[in-house]
Length: 254
Image 1 (cartoon, helix red, strand yellow):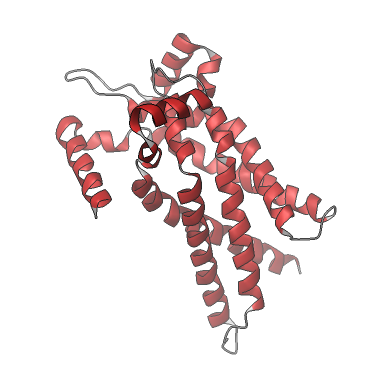
Image 2 (spheres, rainbow, N blue to C red):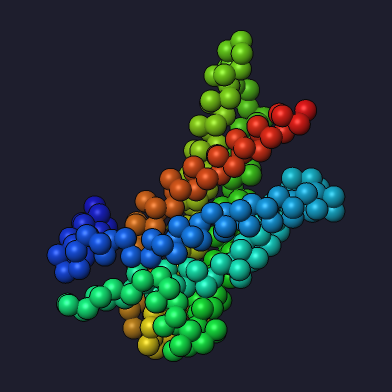
């Protein structure tokens, strides 16, 4: 209840001070980055899983862990500049009477003031966040295996079974992401701090120490409630849709 009240107060404060448009800061880079990042991630995950299944016990936990980890590493390395610009736009404070920087203007400003390296601020924290992806997929794949082995009541044409399986996968994805986010969330706070302009935060370890010393352990979980509201439905839809597409493609090739 306390977290909900804080979120509402922040929401009201942003609206009063910066207007409704401020709620959509960073939307441009987000729209540009979401589709390519998902495509890269799932392509790498599927390829790694296919390769590792030939080395280790097929569909074992070690296969899922290494597949998720390698896919996240490649995706984070490629997409960090886009997420960096998005975060910088979200953190930018609007001065009364001044015009908000657009996506290209923000990217140009980062390049002019910090060079190419500026686009990779927070990358170490993103690498630390691979643990979240690994936890999420390890739990998800275990739940998916359990759902496949559990007999489901089905109608004559199998429609009821398919819809139940789809909803089951959505629930599995939501639960997996919720657990992973709660465990690995501190890296999100550290990454955001590292991406601030003119910040005193320089490296992953230095930032973690500074936040802990100045603000305490609870500071690492600021914004967790908002993160869960955003990520859980997102992940549930993305993973279940991915499974549906894979199912349809496999069904067509048979």
